[in-house]
Length: 316
Image (cartoon, rainbow, N blue to C red; front, side, top):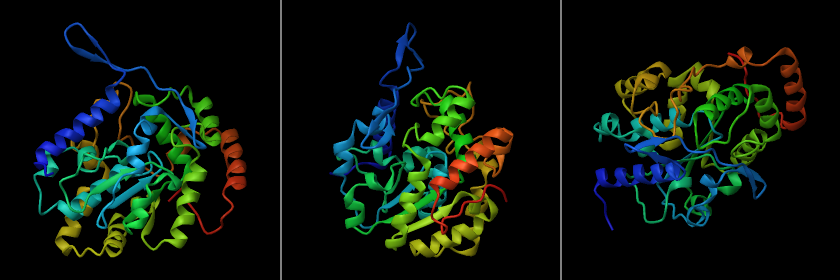
């Protein structure tokens, strides 16, 4: 079965709206109101909401293709950034119309939202996930797909996730900052423990040459260098002009103003509460952590991050 690319993108958009609008109510005049927030529950040892588990069997039976590229991250660790980089590397020249007509969340949809009947029109297919490594469908490993994991330091990741949860109605209520601080350290947030997530993927990377492990802080420090590493991993050879164009186009300030990358067209975000793309900096945690919280966090971090080979920077 084949699909027209525009039609497939429409299907993806409708599916994402279904995923985000199940609990929406409609008021007189056909105005959508924000949904009630979902409850967090334990799913196979990981904190989840039903949005990530309702389609579980279909996702686990997903038939990966050898040229599929999977982007894996803990939430708010650079998912959209790397998605956009890859979309430009693969399709920036061959399908330039995508850049101005199709939002990035349709070009690179969530694995968690893909049903078996839904086929992306591109080759390769670019797919993203927030799953911990043990939840990734086995077909990705069987087909030796390229997988790119992006890790972000826990302090900045916590701050960014807190602000995201405040505006994303598909997330459980984050509560106040002090409450969220404790829940994050306990892994009581969607997709569970940050520590388990980054460590699980790091361990997998040691035995799988098809996993490329990146750091958000490295991307901030030298985007061009990290794009070169991506190209080497993926076997891509963009021209120097194309490389410079991509590097310039994926800078945070440009993406924040770009309606195709800033999620301003997505129904699940309450932009009255915040911005999907907020600061994109390293070290913003200093504006949120108290001295006591920083000391408590560092002590907890030492207990949970035992592997000396995995080092994440909290400053540049």
